[in-house]
Image (cartoon, rainbow, N blue to C red; front, side, top):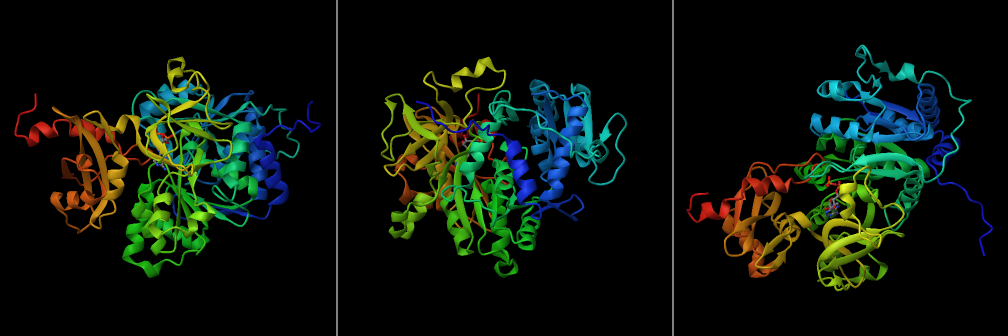
Length: 544
Ligand code: ADP
Protein backbone atom coordinates (compact mmCIF):
# COMPACT_ATOMS: atom_id res chain seq x y z
CA UNK A 1 0.00 0.00 0.00
CA UNK A 2 1.30 3.42 -0.89
CA UNK A 3 0.98 6.48 1.32
CA UNK A 4 -1.61 9.03 0.30
CA UNK A 5 0.72 11.99 0.78
CA UNK A 6 1.87 14.47 -1.85
CA UNK A 7 5.11 14.06 -3.70
CA UNK A 8 6.59 17.47 -2.98
CA UNK A 9 10.10 18.01 -4.34
CA UNK A 10 12.76 19.01 -1.81
CA UNK A 11 14.46 21.90 -3.63
CA UNK A 12 16.35 25.01 -2.57
CA UNK A 13 13.69 27.16 -4.25
CA UNK A 14 11.37 26.48 -1.35
CA UNK A 15 14.00 27.81 1.06
CA UNK A 16 14.39 30.96 -1.03
CA UNK A 17 10.64 31.53 -1.30
CA UNK A 18 10.18 30.95 2.40
CA UNK A 19 12.91 33.45 3.27
CA UNK A 20 11.41 36.05 0.92
CA UNK A 21 7.91 35.74 2.27
CA UNK A 22 8.51 35.12 6.00
CA UNK A 23 11.80 36.70 7.00
CA UNK A 24 11.84 39.81 4.82
CA UNK A 25 12.98 42.13 7.59
CA UNK A 26 15.80 39.92 8.98
CA UNK A 27 19.27 41.34 8.39
CA UNK A 28 22.19 39.95 6.40
CA UNK A 29 25.42 41.72 7.28
CA UNK A 30 28.75 41.57 5.43
CA UNK A 31 32.13 43.05 6.18
CA UNK A 32 33.62 44.39 2.98
CA UNK A 33 37.32 44.41 1.98
CA UNK A 34 37.69 48.02 3.22
CA UNK A 35 36.15 46.90 6.54
CA UNK A 36 32.96 48.89 5.96
CA UNK A 37 29.75 47.05 6.79
CA UNK A 38 27.16 46.18 4.17
CA UNK A 39 23.66 45.62 5.55
CA UNK A 40 20.51 44.54 3.84
CA UNK A 41 17.58 42.22 4.50
CA UNK A 42 16.29 38.85 3.36
CA UNK A 43 13.77 40.81 1.25
CA UNK A 44 16.65 42.41 -0.69
CA UNK A 45 18.50 39.11 -0.89
CA UNK A 46 15.38 37.36 -2.21
CA UNK A 47 14.83 39.96 -4.91
CA UNK A 48 18.48 39.96 -6.04
CA UNK A 49 18.92 36.17 -5.98
CA UNK A 50 15.93 35.86 -8.30
CA UNK A 51 17.31 38.60 -10.55
CA UNK A 52 20.54 36.63 -10.75
CA UNK A 53 18.60 33.49 -11.69
CA UNK A 54 16.74 35.36 -14.39
CA UNK A 55 19.90 36.99 -15.73
CA UNK A 56 21.71 33.66 -15.91
CA UNK A 57 18.87 32.12 -17.87
CA UNK A 58 18.82 35.08 -20.20
CA UNK A 59 22.56 34.67 -20.68
CA UNK A 60 21.94 31.15 -21.93
CA UNK A 61 22.37 29.02 -18.82
CA UNK A 62 20.82 25.59 -19.33
CA UNK A 63 19.69 23.07 -16.76
CA UNK A 64 22.70 21.50 -15.06
CA UNK A 65 25.23 24.09 -16.31
CA UNK A 66 27.95 24.84 -13.80
CA UNK A 67 28.58 28.37 -12.59
CA UNK A 68 31.87 28.83 -10.75
CA UNK A 69 32.24 31.30 -7.88
CA UNK A 70 35.58 32.70 -6.78
CA UNK A 71 34.52 34.74 -3.79
CA UNK A 72 34.93 35.44 -0.09
CA UNK A 73 32.07 35.12 2.41
CA UNK A 74 29.62 37.97 1.77
CA UNK A 75 26.06 38.73 0.66
CA UNK A 76 26.69 38.41 -3.10
CA UNK A 77 28.05 34.92 -2.57
CA UNK A 78 24.82 34.12 -0.71
CA UNK A 79 22.86 35.40 -3.71
CA UNK A 80 24.89 33.02 -5.89
CA UNK A 81 24.15 30.14 -3.47
CA UNK A 82 20.45 30.49 -4.29
CA UNK A 83 20.31 32.34 -7.61
CA UNK A 84 22.37 29.74 -9.50
CA UNK A 85 20.37 26.68 -8.39
CA UNK A 86 17.11 28.65 -8.82
CA UNK A 87 18.02 29.09 -12.48
CA UNK A 88 18.51 25.33 -12.78
CA UNK A 89 22.29 25.75 -12.66
CA UNK A 90 24.92 24.20 -10.40
CA UNK A 91 26.77 26.40 -7.90
CA UNK A 92 30.43 25.44 -8.09
CA UNK A 93 32.42 27.13 -5.33
CA UNK A 94 36.12 27.43 -6.19
CA UNK A 95 38.69 27.37 -3.40
CA UNK A 96 40.69 30.59 -3.74
CA UNK A 97 43.45 29.27 -1.48
CA UNK A 98 44.52 26.62 -3.97
CA UNK A 99 47.36 27.00 -6.43
CA UNK A 100 46.19 28.78 -9.62
CA UNK A 101 46.96 25.65 -11.69
CA UNK A 102 44.73 23.64 -9.43
CA UNK A 103 41.85 26.13 -9.56
CA UNK A 104 42.05 26.10 -13.38
CA UNK A 105 42.08 22.30 -13.39
CA UNK A 106 39.03 22.13 -11.10
CA UNK A 107 36.99 24.72 -13.03
CA UNK A 108 37.74 22.97 -16.32
CA UNK A 109 37.17 19.49 -14.95
CA UNK A 110 33.75 20.61 -13.65
CA UNK A 111 33.04 22.26 -17.03
CA UNK A 112 32.16 25.67 -15.56
CA UNK A 113 30.44 27.83 -18.23
CA UNK A 114 30.16 31.02 -16.20
CA UNK A 115 32.28 32.46 -13.43
CA UNK A 116 31.35 35.04 -10.79
CA UNK A 117 34.44 36.58 -9.19
CA UNK A 118 35.17 39.24 -6.54
CA UNK A 119 37.11 42.14 -7.98
CA UNK A 120 39.67 41.81 -5.16
CA UNK A 121 40.41 38.33 -6.53
CA UNK A 122 41.04 39.45 -10.12
CA UNK A 123 44.84 39.36 -9.62
CA UNK A 124 44.44 35.68 -8.68
CA UNK A 125 42.16 35.05 -11.66
CA UNK A 126 44.70 36.65 -14.01
CA UNK A 127 47.17 33.89 -13.10
CA UNK A 128 45.03 31.23 -14.76
CA UNK A 129 42.54 33.15 -16.92
CA UNK A 130 44.18 32.03 -20.17
CA UNK A 131 43.66 28.37 -19.28
CA UNK A 132 40.02 28.69 -18.23
CA UNK A 133 37.32 27.44 -20.55
CA UNK A 134 34.52 29.59 -19.06
CA UNK A 135 32.43 31.60 -21.53
CA UNK A 136 31.49 34.59 -19.41
CA UNK A 137 33.02 36.23 -16.38
CA UNK A 138 30.92 38.39 -14.07
CA UNK A 139 32.81 40.64 -11.67
CA UNK A 140 31.47 41.69 -8.28
CA UNK A 141 32.70 45.22 -7.74
CA UNK A 142 33.50 45.36 -4.02
CA UNK A 143 36.05 48.15 -4.28
CA UNK A 144 34.58 50.18 -7.15
CA UNK A 145 37.51 49.49 -9.48
CA UNK A 146 36.56 49.43 -13.18
CA UNK A 147 35.78 45.99 -14.56
CA UNK A 148 38.41 44.68 -17.01
CA UNK A 149 37.55 44.43 -20.67
CA UNK A 150 35.82 41.25 -21.74
CA UNK A 151 34.14 40.82 -18.35
CA UNK A 152 30.75 42.00 -17.07
CA UNK A 153 29.81 43.84 -13.92
CA UNK A 154 27.54 41.98 -11.48
CA UNK A 155 25.18 44.87 -10.65
CA UNK A 156 24.48 45.53 -14.34
CA UNK A 157 24.18 41.80 -14.98
CA UNK A 158 21.37 41.42 -12.40
CA UNK A 159 19.80 44.85 -13.01
CA UNK A 160 16.56 43.57 -14.49
CA UNK A 161 13.73 43.04 -11.97
CA UNK A 162 12.57 39.44 -11.68
CA UNK A 163 8.96 39.63 -10.48
CA UNK A 164 8.00 37.64 -13.58
CA UNK A 165 10.73 35.03 -13.13
CA UNK A 166 9.45 31.44 -13.19
CA UNK A 167 11.52 28.69 -11.58
CA UNK A 168 12.31 25.70 -13.75
CA UNK A 169 10.37 22.62 -12.78
CA UNK A 170 13.27 20.87 -11.11
CA UNK A 171 13.44 17.36 -9.82
CA UNK A 172 14.84 17.10 -6.29
CA UNK A 173 17.57 14.72 -7.48
CA UNK A 174 18.99 17.31 -9.89
CA UNK A 175 22.34 18.86 -9.08
CA UNK A 176 22.35 22.15 -7.13
CA UNK A 177 25.95 22.47 -5.99
CA UNK A 178 29.42 21.13 -6.50
CA UNK A 179 32.56 21.15 -4.42
CA UNK A 180 35.99 19.58 -4.89
CA UNK A 181 37.87 17.96 -2.03
CA UNK A 182 41.09 19.83 -1.47
CA UNK A 183 42.87 16.48 -1.29
CA UNK A 184 46.36 16.47 0.18
CA UNK A 185 47.39 13.85 -2.37
CA UNK A 186 46.26 13.23 -5.94
CA UNK A 187 43.97 15.35 -8.08
CA UNK A 188 40.99 16.98 -6.33
CA UNK A 189 37.72 15.11 -6.74
CA UNK A 190 34.30 16.68 -7.28
CA UNK A 191 31.21 15.96 -5.20
CA UNK A 192 27.86 16.97 -6.71
CA UNK A 193 25.12 17.85 -4.21
CA UNK A 194 21.51 17.36 -5.24
CA UNK A 195 18.74 19.76 -4.15
CA UNK A 196 17.32 16.97 -2.02
CA UNK A 197 20.60 16.30 -0.23
CA UNK A 198 21.08 19.99 0.61
CA UNK A 199 17.52 20.38 1.87
CA UNK A 200 17.71 17.28 4.08
CA UNK A 201 21.14 18.37 5.30
CA UNK A 202 19.64 21.74 6.31
CA UNK A 203 16.89 20.03 8.31
CA UNK A 204 19.37 17.78 10.07
CA UNK A 205 21.77 20.68 10.81
CA UNK A 206 19.04 22.82 12.37
CA UNK A 207 18.03 20.13 14.89
CA UNK A 208 18.51 20.94 18.57
CA UNK A 209 20.62 17.80 19.01
CA UNK A 210 22.99 18.68 16.17
CA UNK A 211 23.88 22.33 15.45
CA UNK A 212 20.63 23.67 16.88
CA UNK A 213 20.18 26.68 14.58
CA UNK A 214 16.97 28.69 14.71
CA UNK A 215 15.61 32.10 13.76
CA UNK A 216 16.77 33.32 17.18
CA UNK A 217 20.38 32.92 16.08
CA UNK A 218 22.91 35.32 14.64
CA UNK A 219 25.24 33.10 12.62
CA UNK A 220 28.74 33.90 11.43
CA UNK A 221 30.38 31.21 9.29
CA UNK A 222 34.16 31.60 9.58
CA UNK A 223 34.49 28.49 7.44
CA UNK A 224 34.75 29.79 3.88
CA UNK A 225 31.80 29.53 1.53
CA UNK A 226 34.16 27.72 -0.88
CA UNK A 227 34.71 24.96 1.66
CA UNK A 228 31.83 22.43 1.68
CA UNK A 229 29.24 25.25 1.32
CA UNK A 230 30.45 26.87 4.56
CA UNK A 231 29.32 23.61 6.15
CA UNK A 232 25.84 24.15 4.72
CA UNK A 233 25.19 27.12 7.04
CA UNK A 234 23.94 29.54 4.36
CA UNK A 235 21.27 26.99 3.42
CA UNK A 236 20.35 26.11 6.99
CA UNK A 237 20.19 29.77 8.09
CA UNK A 238 18.06 30.76 5.12
CA UNK A 239 15.70 27.88 5.86
CA UNK A 240 15.18 28.95 9.48
CA UNK A 241 15.51 32.71 8.93
CA UNK A 242 18.56 33.27 11.15
CA UNK A 243 20.42 36.57 10.82
CA UNK A 244 23.60 35.95 8.80
CA UNK A 245 26.89 37.74 9.32
CA UNK A 246 29.73 37.36 6.82
CA UNK A 247 33.33 38.28 7.62
CA UNK A 248 34.49 38.98 4.04
CA UNK A 249 38.25 38.47 3.75
CA UNK A 250 38.94 39.52 7.38
CA UNK A 251 39.63 36.25 9.16
CA UNK A 252 42.26 37.30 11.73
CA UNK A 253 41.26 36.76 15.38
CA UNK A 254 40.82 40.45 16.28
CA UNK A 255 38.58 41.19 13.26
CA UNK A 256 36.46 38.14 14.07
CA UNK A 257 36.14 39.04 17.74
CA UNK A 258 35.08 42.59 16.76
CA UNK A 259 32.37 41.12 14.57
CA UNK A 260 31.22 38.62 17.24
CA UNK A 261 30.88 41.53 19.62
CA UNK A 262 29.45 44.11 17.21
CA UNK A 263 26.71 41.84 15.85
CA UNK A 264 26.24 39.85 19.08
CA UNK A 265 26.82 36.59 17.24
CA UNK A 266 25.31 33.47 18.84
CA UNK A 267 26.68 30.79 16.51
CA UNK A 268 29.91 30.45 14.60
CA UNK A 269 31.87 27.65 12.95
CA UNK A 270 35.40 26.97 11.76
CA UNK A 271 38.52 24.81 11.92
CA UNK A 272 40.51 24.48 15.18
CA UNK A 273 43.37 26.72 14.03
CA UNK A 274 40.96 29.68 13.91
CA UNK A 275 39.88 29.04 17.50
CA UNK A 276 43.44 28.53 18.73
CA UNK A 277 44.21 32.02 17.38
CA UNK A 278 41.10 33.54 18.94
CA UNK A 279 41.91 31.93 22.26
CA UNK A 280 45.33 33.53 22.37
CA UNK A 281 43.79 36.99 21.85
CA UNK A 282 41.03 36.34 24.39
CA UNK A 283 43.55 35.24 26.99
CA UNK A 284 45.63 38.39 26.61
CA UNK A 285 42.69 40.66 27.46
CA UNK A 286 39.81 38.57 28.77
CA UNK A 287 37.64 41.54 29.85
CA UNK A 288 37.85 43.37 26.54
CA UNK A 289 35.33 41.37 24.52
CA UNK A 290 31.72 41.74 25.45
CA UNK A 291 30.52 38.62 23.63
CA UNK A 292 27.00 37.25 23.59
CA UNK A 293 26.75 34.74 26.49
CA UNK A 294 24.86 32.42 24.11
CA UNK A 295 27.80 32.25 21.68
CA UNK A 296 28.62 28.69 20.72
CA UNK A 297 31.24 27.65 18.25
CA UNK A 298 31.22 24.56 16.11
CA UNK A 299 34.71 23.22 15.69
CA UNK A 300 35.37 20.70 12.94
CA UNK A 301 37.49 19.95 9.91
CA UNK A 302 40.21 18.65 12.23
CA UNK A 303 40.14 17.33 15.80
CA UNK A 304 39.30 19.86 18.52
CA UNK A 305 41.77 19.23 21.35
CA UNK A 306 40.14 18.71 24.76
CA UNK A 307 42.31 21.53 26.09
CA UNK A 308 40.68 23.91 23.59
CA UNK A 309 37.18 22.94 24.72
CA UNK A 310 38.19 23.42 28.37
CA UNK A 311 39.88 26.75 27.67
CA UNK A 312 36.83 28.22 25.93
CA UNK A 313 34.59 27.03 28.77
CA UNK A 314 36.70 29.21 31.08
CA UNK A 315 35.59 32.17 28.94
CA UNK A 316 31.97 30.94 29.01
CA UNK A 317 32.10 30.06 25.32
CA UNK A 318 30.75 26.71 24.33
CA UNK A 319 32.67 24.59 21.84
CA UNK A 320 30.64 21.98 19.97
CA UNK A 321 32.84 19.40 18.31
CA UNK A 322 31.63 18.03 14.97
CA UNK A 323 33.01 15.80 12.23
CA UNK A 324 32.35 15.83 8.52
CA UNK A 325 33.82 15.87 5.03
CA UNK A 326 33.19 17.35 1.60
CA UNK A 327 31.71 13.96 0.71
CA UNK A 328 29.25 14.14 3.65
CA UNK A 329 27.92 17.65 2.84
CA UNK A 330 29.51 17.86 5.58
CA UNK A 331 27.40 17.07 8.66
CA UNK A 332 28.34 13.60 9.92
CA UNK A 333 28.59 13.54 13.71
CA UNK A 334 28.15 16.10 16.50
CA UNK A 335 29.37 15.72 20.05
CA UNK A 336 26.65 16.83 22.43
CA UNK A 337 26.17 14.94 25.70
CA UNK A 338 23.24 12.62 26.29
CA UNK A 339 21.15 13.70 29.30
CA UNK A 340 22.48 11.00 31.63
CA UNK A 341 26.07 12.10 30.88
CA UNK A 342 25.47 15.41 32.59
CA UNK A 343 25.87 13.64 35.93
CA UNK A 344 29.27 12.21 34.99
CA UNK A 345 32.47 13.70 36.38
CA UNK A 346 33.79 16.82 34.70
CA UNK A 347 36.69 14.85 33.20
CA UNK A 348 34.40 12.19 31.78
CA UNK A 349 32.17 14.85 30.24
CA UNK A 350 35.15 16.50 28.57
CA UNK A 351 36.31 13.13 27.28
CA UNK A 352 32.96 12.70 25.51
CA UNK A 353 32.88 16.26 24.23
CA UNK A 354 36.35 15.82 22.74
CA UNK A 355 35.14 12.83 20.72
CA UNK A 356 33.54 13.53 17.34
CA UNK A 357 30.15 12.47 18.67
CA UNK A 358 26.93 10.84 17.59
CA UNK A 359 25.88 10.52 13.96
CA UNK A 360 23.09 12.85 12.85
CA UNK A 361 19.78 11.13 12.05
CA UNK A 362 19.99 9.33 8.71
CA UNK A 363 23.77 9.13 8.86
CA UNK A 364 24.81 5.54 9.44
CA UNK A 365 28.33 4.81 10.65
CA UNK A 366 30.41 1.67 10.97
CA UNK A 367 34.02 0.75 11.66
CA UNK A 368 35.62 -1.81 9.37
CA UNK A 369 39.02 -3.46 9.72
CA UNK A 370 40.67 -6.72 8.58
CA UNK A 371 38.43 -8.65 10.97
CA UNK A 372 35.24 -7.17 9.48
CA UNK A 373 32.79 -4.77 11.13
CA UNK A 374 34.19 -3.77 14.53
CA UNK A 375 32.21 -3.87 17.79
CA UNK A 376 31.15 -0.63 19.53
CA UNK A 377 33.66 -1.08 22.33
CA UNK A 378 35.42 2.27 22.15
CA UNK A 379 38.73 0.45 21.52
CA UNK A 380 38.74 -1.42 18.24
CA UNK A 381 40.08 0.84 15.52
CA UNK A 382 39.21 0.59 11.87
CA UNK A 383 38.15 2.65 8.90
CA UNK A 384 35.07 4.78 9.42
CA UNK A 385 32.45 4.13 6.74
CA UNK A 386 29.25 6.11 6.35
CA UNK A 387 26.06 6.17 4.31
CA UNK A 388 22.97 8.34 4.18
CA UNK A 389 20.92 10.74 2.05
CA UNK A 390 23.58 13.50 1.98
CA UNK A 391 26.61 11.24 1.57
CA UNK A 392 28.32 11.03 -1.84
CA UNK A 393 27.66 7.85 -3.79
CA UNK A 394 30.34 8.71 -6.36
CA UNK A 395 32.74 11.43 -7.52
CA UNK A 396 32.06 13.53 -10.59
CA UNK A 397 33.58 11.95 -13.66
CA UNK A 398 36.22 9.93 -11.81
CA UNK A 399 35.85 6.25 -12.64
CA UNK A 400 39.32 5.70 -11.13
CA UNK A 401 37.96 6.54 -7.66
CA UNK A 402 35.34 3.83 -7.34
CA UNK A 403 37.39 2.16 -4.59
CA UNK A 404 36.28 4.94 -2.20
CA UNK A 405 32.87 3.26 -2.19
CA UNK A 406 32.17 -0.27 -1.00
CA UNK A 407 30.17 -2.77 -2.99
CA UNK A 408 27.46 -2.80 -0.34
CA UNK A 409 26.88 0.95 -0.64
CA UNK A 410 29.05 2.69 1.99
CA UNK A 411 31.49 5.56 1.55
CA UNK A 412 35.01 4.86 2.82
CA UNK A 413 36.05 8.01 4.68
CA UNK A 414 39.78 7.28 4.95
CA UNK A 415 39.48 8.16 8.65
CA UNK A 416 40.40 5.70 11.35
CA UNK A 417 38.00 5.67 14.27
CA UNK A 418 36.46 3.83 17.20
CA UNK A 419 32.80 3.78 18.28
CA UNK A 420 32.01 3.40 21.99
CA UNK A 421 29.01 1.63 23.57
CA UNK A 422 27.15 4.99 23.75
CA UNK A 423 27.59 5.32 19.96
CA UNK A 424 30.13 8.16 20.13
CA UNK A 425 32.57 8.13 17.23
CA UNK A 426 36.17 9.01 17.97
CA UNK A 427 38.52 9.78 15.09
CA UNK A 428 41.97 8.49 15.90
CA UNK A 429 43.64 9.33 12.61
CA UNK A 430 43.43 9.57 8.87
CA UNK A 431 44.52 6.36 7.19
CA UNK A 432 47.47 8.14 5.63
CA UNK A 433 48.58 9.77 8.92
CA UNK A 434 48.41 6.62 11.05
CA UNK A 435 51.66 5.60 12.68
CA UNK A 436 52.33 1.87 12.37
CA UNK A 437 54.93 0.92 14.94
CA UNK A 438 55.95 -2.74 15.07
CA UNK A 439 52.63 -3.77 13.52
CA UNK A 440 50.56 -1.77 16.06
CA UNK A 441 48.70 1.46 15.39
CA UNK A 442 49.45 4.67 17.24
CA UNK A 443 46.95 7.54 17.07
CA UNK A 444 48.71 10.74 16.13
CA UNK A 445 45.58 12.73 16.99
CA UNK A 446 45.54 11.57 20.64
CA UNK A 447 49.19 12.51 21.07
CA UNK A 448 48.68 15.92 19.44
CA UNK A 449 45.71 16.73 21.61
CA UNK A 450 47.61 15.83 24.75
CA UNK A 451 50.58 17.95 23.67
CA UNK A 452 48.32 20.91 22.93
CA UNK A 453 47.12 20.60 26.53
CA UNK A 454 50.61 21.64 27.73
CA UNK A 455 50.60 25.33 28.72
CA UNK A 456 53.65 26.20 26.58
CA UNK A 457 52.43 24.52 23.39
CA UNK A 458 50.54 26.53 20.76
CA UNK A 459 50.33 23.79 18.12
CA UNK A 460 51.53 20.22 17.75
CA UNK A 461 51.53 17.72 14.90
CA UNK A 462 52.66 14.14 15.43
CA UNK A 463 53.92 12.33 12.36
CA UNK A 464 55.35 8.94 11.47
CA UNK A 465 59.05 8.82 10.66
CA UNK A 466 60.60 5.70 9.07
CA UNK A 467 62.47 3.51 11.58
CA UNK A 468 64.79 0.59 10.78
CA UNK A 469 63.41 -1.66 13.50
CA UNK A 470 59.81 -0.54 14.11
CA UNK A 471 58.99 0.52 10.49
CA UNK A 472 57.60 3.79 11.83
CA UNK A 473 57.88 5.77 15.04
CA UNK A 474 56.07 8.93 16.19
CA UNK A 475 57.84 12.28 16.07
CA UNK A 476 56.26 15.40 17.59
CA UNK A 477 56.58 18.69 15.72
CA UNK A 478 55.77 21.54 18.07
CA UNK A 479 55.20 25.30 17.89
CA UNK A 480 55.60 26.99 21.28
CA UNK A 481 53.40 29.89 22.39
CA UNK A 482 54.95 33.33 22.06
CA UNK A 483 57.51 33.82 24.83
CA UNK A 484 56.94 30.30 26.27
CA UNK A 485 59.65 27.72 26.85
CA UNK A 486 59.65 23.93 27.10
CA UNK A 487 62.21 21.21 26.52
CA UNK A 488 61.84 17.95 24.65
CA UNK A 489 62.24 16.05 27.91
CA UNK A 490 59.52 18.10 29.60
CA UNK A 491 56.99 17.50 26.83
CA UNK A 492 57.65 13.75 26.77
CA UNK A 493 57.21 13.71 30.57
CA UNK A 494 53.91 15.53 30.07
CA UNK A 495 52.72 12.69 27.82
CA UNK A 496 54.18 9.80 29.83
CA UNK A 497 51.36 9.35 32.38
CA UNK A 498 48.71 9.37 29.65
CA UNK A 499 50.02 6.81 27.17
CA UNK A 500 51.63 3.39 26.88
CA UNK A 501 55.40 3.72 26.76
CA UNK A 502 55.66 2.60 23.13
CA UNK A 503 53.23 5.35 22.08
CA UNK A 504 55.53 8.13 23.30
CA UNK A 505 57.21 10.10 20.47
CA UNK A 506 60.88 9.30 19.89
CA UNK A 507 61.58 13.00 19.83
CA UNK A 508 60.23 16.53 19.75
CA UNK A 509 61.34 19.08 17.18
CA UNK A 510 60.49 22.73 17.65
CA UNK A 511 59.47 24.74 14.59
CA UNK A 512 58.19 28.27 13.95
CA UNK A 513 55.08 27.12 12.12
CA UNK A 514 53.36 24.00 10.92
CA UNK A 515 52.58 23.94 7.18
CA UNK A 516 48.87 24.01 6.44
CA UNK A 517 46.48 22.88 3.73
CA UNK A 518 44.26 25.40 1.95
CA UNK A 519 41.59 24.66 4.55
CA UNK A 520 43.92 25.55 7.44
CA UNK A 521 44.61 21.97 8.51
CA UNK A 522 48.08 20.66 9.33
CA UNK A 523 49.80 19.46 6.17
CA UNK A 524 51.36 16.37 7.65
CA UNK A 525 52.46 14.96 4.31
CA UNK A 526 54.90 17.85 4.03
CA UNK A 527 56.24 17.28 7.55
CA UNK A 528 56.67 13.58 6.86
CA UNK A 529 58.75 14.45 3.84
CA UNK A 530 60.77 17.07 5.73
CA UNK A 531 61.61 14.72 8.63
CA UNK A 532 61.88 11.42 6.76
CA UNK A 533 65.56 11.05 7.71
CA UNK A 534 65.12 12.19 11.29
CA UNK A 535 65.86 8.79 12.88
CA UNK A 536 69.05 8.30 10.84
CA UNK A 537 70.19 11.83 11.55
CA UNK A 538 69.59 11.51 15.26
CA UNK A 539 71.62 8.32 15.33
CA UNK A 540 74.44 10.20 13.70
CA UNK A 541 74.24 8.32 10.42
CA UNK A 542 74.34 10.18 7.15
CA UNK A 543 71.14 10.00 5.11
CA UNK A 544 71.39 7.90 1.92
P1 ADP B 1 40.32 17.52 3.01
O1 ADP B 1 40.77 17.73 4.43
O2 ADP B 1 40.73 16.22 2.44
O3 ADP B 1 40.55 18.69 2.16
P2 ADP B 1 37.60 17.77 3.92
O4 ADP B 1 37.58 19.19 4.16
O5 ADP B 1 36.42 17.12 3.35
O6 ADP B 1 38.75 17.40 2.98
O7 ADP B 1 38.04 17.12 5.27
C1 ADP B 1 37.52 15.94 5.79
C2 ADP B 1 38.47 15.34 6.77
O8 ADP B 1 38.75 16.25 7.83
C3 ADP B 1 37.90 14.14 7.46
O9 ADP B 1 38.07 12.99 6.67
C4 ADP B 1 38.73 14.08 8.72
O10 ADP B 1 39.97 13.45 8.51
C5 ADP B 1 38.97 15.52 9.03
N1 ADP B 1 38.05 15.97 10.06
C6 ADP B 1 36.94 16.69 9.91
N2 ADP B 1 36.36 16.95 11.10
C7 ADP B 1 37.14 16.38 12.03
C8 ADP B 1 37.09 16.29 13.47
N3 ADP B 1 36.15 16.87 14.18
N4 ADP B 1 38.07 15.60 14.07
C9 ADP B 1 39.05 15.01 13.37
N5 ADP B 1 39.17 15.07 12.04
C10 ADP B 1 38.22 15.74 11.38
